[in-house]
Length: 85
Image: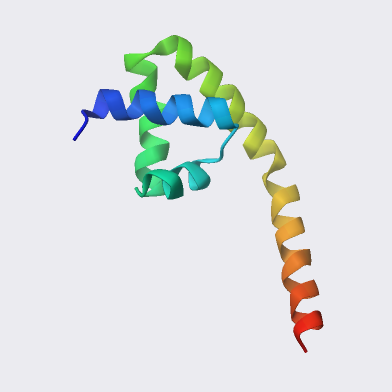
């Protein structure tokens, strides 16, 4: 098993390369969203400040777009319900 430092860097690189959300990253690595979030927002800053800055930019973009993705998900949910009836 890798160390917390290694895991933080691996998660940060994954988010950066894939423009991934914390939730999607957690699913890929089969760990909790809380762990991913803590690793890339707190621990990564200490272990790799350059990577942290880049990952923070991706997370900030995700946060700004969050309401749009939520709206699309809700729309799709109700479209699926009406089609399945």
